[in-house]
Each structure stands twice: as C-alpha cells, then as structure tokens.
Image (tube, rainbow over all chains, first blue to last red; front, top):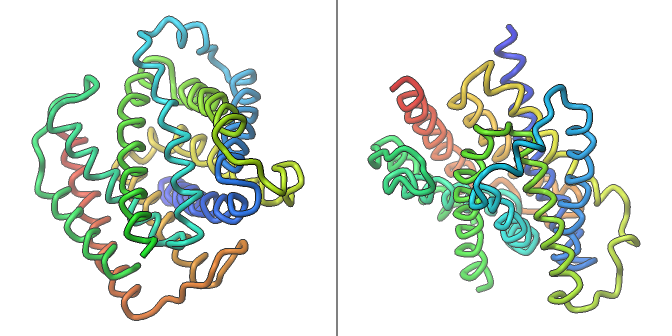
Length: 143
Length: 152
C-alpha cells in the first residue's frame, strides 16, 4: 500500500516536471528565455536554502570539502533550462520531453560504457538500446 | 523548419542532464541530495544572472512584471527533488525512474492536447497515440534494465 502511494507521489512529481516546462515556455516568450531560466534557479535556490536550514543533518560543511570537479554539476543546469524554455513553445511539451529523454538515455549509456566521472564501467546493454530505438521512432511519430 | 534545429538542441539538453546527474550522483552520495540540489540551483542562479545582464537582449517586459503564477515553475522542480529523496529508498531507483518518466510524458501530452498554461494546442492524433504505445515499451525496457543493474 505504502509502495503504491509512493509510486503515485513520484508519478505526480514527474508530471510536475512537465508543468514546470509548460510554465517556462510561455514565460520565456514574454520576458526572455534567460530571465525565465533565472526565475527557476532563483526561486528553486531560495526554497532549497530554506529546506537546508531546517534539514535534520547539516551537509554544507562537507559539501565544500569535496573535490572541486564534483561541485561543477550545476554549471550545466542553465544550459538545460534555456534549451527547454526555447524549445517548448515551438515543439510542444510532449515532443521536447521525448527528445530530452532520448538525449539523456543515450548519453547515460555512453557515460556508463566509458566509465566517465568515476561511474562504474558498464557495457551497453540490450534493454537500454532497445528503449532508445523505441524512443527514436516515437520521437519521429510525435513531432 | 525550426524543429530541425530545436530537436537536436533538445537532445543536447538531455545529454547535459545525463552528465549533470552523473557528476551530481557522486556528490549526492557524499553529501546528500538536498545539499547537491542546493548547490546546483545556486550555481545556476549565478550563471543565469550573468546571462540576463550580459547576454540577453533587453526585453519589453521585465521578469517582475510577468504574472506571478508563471513564476511557480521552480516549486514543481523542488517538489520533484524532495519526492525523489524520500521515495528512492522506499521503492528503488528503477521504479522511481519509470514513474517519473511516465508522469512527465503523460503531463506533457496533456498540456499539449488541452493547450494548458498558455501553450499552443497540439492534439493527440493517431500518430501521437502510436508514439505513446512505443514509449510504454521503452519505459518497460528502462525498468527491466535498471532492475537488472540494481540487483547485479
């Protein structure tokens, strides 16, 4: 029962990601794609700052003692948000999400294969190549 | 015509997401998802401010003049992060990924179909229904692949 409830919450969280993209597109059209991106990171950063202050464990001291390359993940965030803000008004939310999914899985497969960024090396498996193949056809049909 | 540029761009967006999640995955294992997400958003804010100030052409309407409801996107993003923090230990990464992707695609197609939130209308035609069937197959394969990796 608890499992099904958790699945529903996560499904709703996934829906939220599309709502976020659906809000971003029209906002970017009126105020500029980069301003819309700023809005996401600023509001998100503020909310998470609140969450961190009241979180049961204090993680910030450890955060800044990690190797510097591990702290660079956030650099790519704005690239991603500017892209969805630009793409959704023209492609639609559905097509954008399917294209993102394809890029994500394909790259994940490559990173695993070469063991990049300290990820354990894993050979390309049939499941994910099969999934990629189906997503490619879906992308062709959907747009 | 524009979609010939935008689809590769969206693919690139997915690629940045994958790179970001492998770097952040390492960091998350060391300091927790919340602190990792916080850093991502703070760095993202800094870069976005620089982009707005020095790259973006001046706009007729400023961000603060936009309707407030359009600015609520980040609440959904943060809800997603918090939901994952609590759910992955309970249901595993395989099931969580599948539920997220399913939710994302369902809502994306609904927003398009009903033109919600001020988006243009793209109706669910037979081609889109066929794509949904293929995507269900893809989601099933992703689940099986993740399950296998989780247990191995």
